[in-house]
Image (cartoon, rainbow, N blue to C red):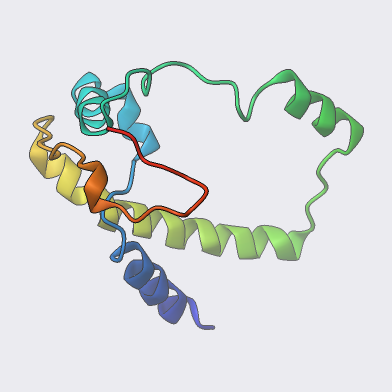
Length: 120
């Protein structure tokens, strides 16, 4: 059972990111405003149907999910690890009590690919 090493690997990988958006925080208007201000784009708090749209419902009808007991046990363990990881990586947001101070994004801070450009 290598759950602890997997957890440590996940923490290490997440620690390399400069910004991680926390979907659950999109209910907090201050968080949404801080993200929109960071990117200079509006609309982060708008509703989306990306996972619950008609296409997804139709696909679920055509190919219903059947999960075996062994998979349920593994998923339960993975969900426990995921919950722990979520709590560990979001506790700093809880400490801010709705006062988010993300810096403004500067396009020159990002490397671009030759076929993609970053505009201010």
